[in-house]
Every structure is written in C-alpha cells, then in structure tokens.
Length: 310
Image (cartoon, rainbow, N blue to C red):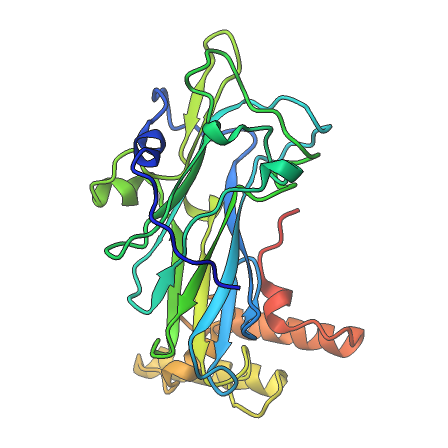
C-alpha cells in the first residue's frame, strides 16, 4: 500500500550530510554492496535488480515497494560487533515518469533493523517536489572507537530502510533507472558527501572510508514494454525462437549499424540490461529455455537472470 508522503525534518539533513574523516578510497576486503529488493501488488514482475512492466496487462500507474539492503560479506553471530561506524545509502532517479516515495526507517520495536541502532543514530532524507534524491544513514561518528553490532547473522538480515516508487502510466517504453549515488555522481551534482559510503574502524588508527562504485551498487532497472520479458516475437512464450530473432537482428546490426527492433522489442530482448540485444542476451535466453524445459518449476526469465546475494 502506498504510504502518504511526508516532508523530511530539516534536522535530518545535517546529520546525513556529515561525512566521516576521509582517509583513502580503498577496496575493502569485505567488498560492501548495496542493492534494492522490489515487490508490487500492482502486478509488475519484480526482482532485486529489475522491475518489468508489461503495458498489455498494466496500462495504468504502477506502484512498487522497495527495501534497501547493505552487505559486507561477513557471517556473524547475532550481537557481534562489525567494523562499521558510519553507513549511508543514497539513491536517485532522473526519469520524470518515476516518483520516489518517502524513506522509512526499520521498525526498531521488533528489531527489524540490521544493526542495534537507536532512532537517534539513524537519519533519512526523502524526495521533494524538486528532486528524487533519497538517503538513509546510520552513524556512530560522535562516539570514538564505537562500531555497530548486528542483529542477525549477516548485515542483510534486515533492510537498512524502506521506500517505494510510482511509475506513471505515461512512462515511455524502455528503461528507467533508480540508481545508487556514487561519489563521482554526487560531486558532479554538487552534493559532495551525499553519496553511498561506509566508514570502517579497525582499531589502532586503522580507520578507512569506502565509497562503493560500479558493480558494488546494484541499481534497480524499471523496464517498460508491451510484451513479456524475453518474448521478442510477442507470441506469449519465451523460447529458442526469441533467441534466434535476437541473433538475426544482431547479425544485421553488425552489417548495417542499425537494429530493426522497436523499443518494445529491444526492452524485451535486452536480458542483461546493457542497452543492446546481442549474442550474450541470446545465450541467456537459451540457457533459461533449457532450464524451463528441464525443471517445470514456473520460474520466470526475470527471476532466472536477476542478481541474487549469496
């Protein structure tokens, strides 16, 4: 259910903007990652990295619920200390057809938060009429040497926070991306210190600040088409004929430098969501087709190819 939008408290913004002392942008041994998990009561097909909207079935506005997750790759016993003293997830969407919802904190009453944080140690920034920029942070920077303890066996035991998005019925076919803000993007937007980052304390002045980038930030791609995901020829099934059509168009494109696919077809054919339909997409379709024939478990192509935290 869509939550009524609230205006973020002015006092929240300074807390989120506080940046930990910068030491180096190293690659942490735990390789921190951020990603979204999406769900929809509207009927959109959702996964951790893709939301697919088939306009034949969903002609109106579509609302999706989203949870924001962080993973450091460590395995804990509940109550263990991490190295984390500050953590912030920040995200945005530049599509005028996607409106992000307010950011909601985890329910601490029922310990549905990844860390044993007090509400005063968490802060959130929700979108405004002018921007979709959103963020949630956990901070112990005012407490020397302090680090967060986990409430589960992994940092992905519970979400960092919750939000949602409305995709307009007027959204054009193609991809609309809700993306995590990395350091370069935030600086380019004049939002220095408002990107996804983690400050780690190892003791004995071995502190470090980590700025995830690239594949460590799993964006949420909202795909809008008029057919099923993978159903390039629009015959209501995903099979080898769709892979064959991708390969045919790919071969033509290699010669003429022009694809015959419509935007609707390309959106359905671009299985790995890299803005092209080529041999790698055909291979993924064939792999899925072989899987579906052998297993008969009803798993969709989208679920088959989506990012899965392990």
